Amino acid sequence: MREAHLYRCRVWVLLILIGASASAAQAQLSTEDHLAEPGFWATQDRASRQEFTGPEACAICHATKFQSQKDTPMAQTLIPTRLADILHEHPTLSFKTGKYNYQIHTKGQESSYSVSDGSRKLSYPLTWAFGTSRVAQSYLFKAPEGGFLESRATYFTHLSNLEFTPARALTSPSSLEEAMYRPVGSAEIVRCFACHSTASSIGGHFDEQHLIPGVTCEACHGPGANHVTAMDSPQATKSANLKPAIFNSGHLSPADSVDFCGACHGSWWDVKLAGVKGVSTARSAPYRLVTSKCWGSKGDTRLTCTACHDPHKQLQTEASAYDQKCLACHANSPGSKMTTSHTGVVCPKASSNCTSCHMPKVNVPEMHADFTDHRIRIVKPGEAFPE
Image (tube, rainbow, N blue to C red; front, side):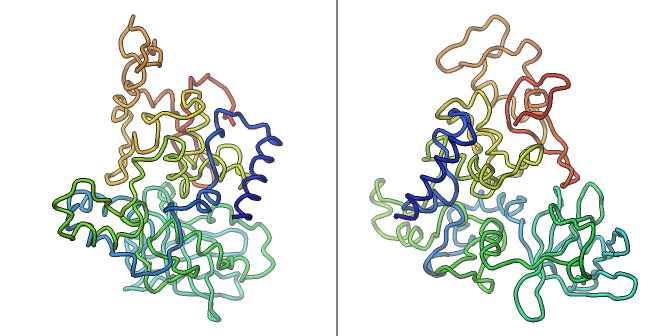
């Protein structure tokens, strides 16, 4: 508890030092801070693997949500490389920079990652694939002596080929080994798998053998064994007030709700403490969302991540799919007046495809892709990217 208190003190001191706006951070906390609180939070370590049931157990009562969620990018954001469609559909991938030639060759169930400098060549079988074909997929593999290594080559969908893994480019590596990979420490492995898999950390230790690949039901709702037991009990059919022993983020306050998604997608404080700046922050939708003027000081249930995005369904990419969400706050016809429920003014330009103007796409160079900027605003021609 003392450590959590000291961490909060450091956070608030940092808030004063960086002069952050009260509207953006008044009620927000970092993920580390939330994890120090009692109760379940996304990416939390658990005491026992027996607390988890696996998504198939959830499917018995929640078949529709299970069927749609298992095909989402979240559910497929971590897979063994032997199952990676990207690698099987592109059996030979390569790019060259300076004297170094990077290649991933897939044959059968194995994908081999190699780097050569013209005189030497190193090659390792890949183990895990992070990400999907929506934007990019990165890879981990094992060192002969143990431990994880991160490939410096990532597959980017918009390139249909390999390039440097974001933030891992080296212009003058000191050796072939350094050109090929980056060693990943145990603490970072825990964080990476916590956001890309379910039940990966048990009792303070990374459990590679028993983790559930991808973000499945219990990653966001907490371990389900007690829930299944409660729902299977005779009392479950007799009492509507029986506590379900499961976490529902729909009951969170707006600020906590956005922070909950931000545990993996980047909360306001996570981004600030990480020192990320510029267009790269567009990758962290929760961070950008709470910097919107319409977020206010406490947020709004109509403006949380899950108000617009159902994590059990495929992401909608058409601007028109979000019009009704915008019009839940904004008056939608000329001459309409603002009300207590519709405090947003009427847009003088249009009442459709709202996000195409007010949530513009910005190019994030290291991702070789455009990201929707979730800082909702009136965009002015030629303006710099607003921090």
